[in-house]
Length: 629
Image (cartoon, rainbow, N blue to C red; front, top):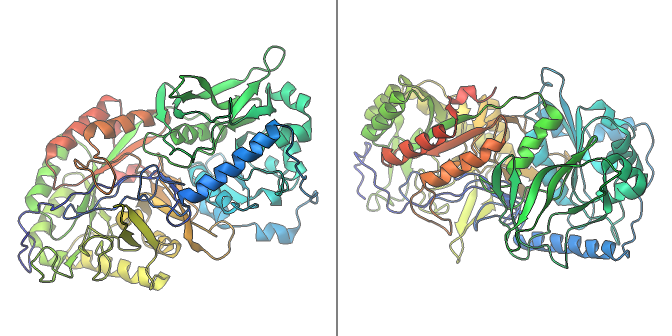
């Protein structure tokens, strides 16, 4: 497409629209990803998947730092241990005894980023303790999963996260609720790292304890199996991940009248624990959510509760999507941290990838429609458009600033007068003069992360650019804000990272310059431990409500994704019906937001269909500044 030099084109028809798929958590470069939403490009070219789908991607190409091979091996180790335990052959070496009172030096070492990340406690002093595993060949997964829990808990108040091995007696009494993520299956060559004090305290405290994944059977052995059954009504020592030698085909979780998806590739499913309920004469166990086997139709508990203990039968942060079973976990946190919360369902829409090369007429059309519906919305603006190699201008490089696009600026001001809130979407939304991974053109490519496309047409995340640093990221933010000012536009207070990917240092910079980020994000190993940040191990996550994350930044939700009519990079098309279905699944979150984005170069009709469908579910549309409450 020919673009007139020195001015914004009158129209922009994408050569190849490649939608971005979502992902929630990513962990080892090229591997784990949670499902996050799709953050797409300008529509000129292709767009990579946004912010990982969780550990191990539900869809190919989503960002993650733990590869499927790692998850496969991790699950294989866990299932092998579970079979040995089932056969009564698994020897477990107890954790060494710890002092009753915490050593001040140990306490200082375990004061980490998550302690301060959540900011001041909520109005009732709500606080969460997140404990995680660090030992064994896959011990690094514990910190990644812990960040996912800590981020969600940051919605409610303060959060402290530390290795479970550092736990000291009675610590649970200092917090509103405690969460333990059992990601290392202890036994055999890996000694138990969970202190006996935690097993005892979890049993005796009246405070809520949520146990996720492995090792609850070790607690039952530590406190006495019959004592455990008398308090909780089930027997973890007789509960296993397999039935008849298989984890089955659990592809759905039902929770609060919603059918949530569970899509895990063959060979990478570690299963869901099947709790052995004790039955008559023992306390009743509440079955909060149920797992459904798509082949046999059999159902079994996915999450249960009795007395102070909530147990979730798997770690729900791998291979997630916008309608995934992680939604059930996101809602269960309210039971422990804010049980009096009443149902409230809000929705939010933002218009994406607006730049000096956007079509002012299209922008005004979107503004008129949204104003007619009395819908406040966000506009994500890239202040400088650049095509350094002339990919869309016959090889002639082109750069346009907002100040050089008065018609676009006038359209933006019109939008701000009709319900829009200005948001900053990077400086140029591309990197240097190279394909990263597509064309090097604004909106198509990553700005704060490197990526390439592999032979199988997947987008592969390569990590931060070589020059990445706090100073480098700040220089781009400063330039972006100067470009807004030069065009006579107000300073944006909200930020969305291009393609939802940046380094830990970059996120710190964004948090220092804006009141909140509205996006899905990557979280890197080392953030909780206070050690060096490992840029090759990270987890990607999106949220159904605002959180104060482990970087100390308020992150506003984007959990529904975006409209994309054509498939790309092994990702399917995403149509209004898909967005509406995801919004329906998120009704399970009692105070959740259905947040999505739309590219104004598309016709208004799909946006109207999406908004009508979400409204019909009972959602109320609000502006971005309303989301942090």
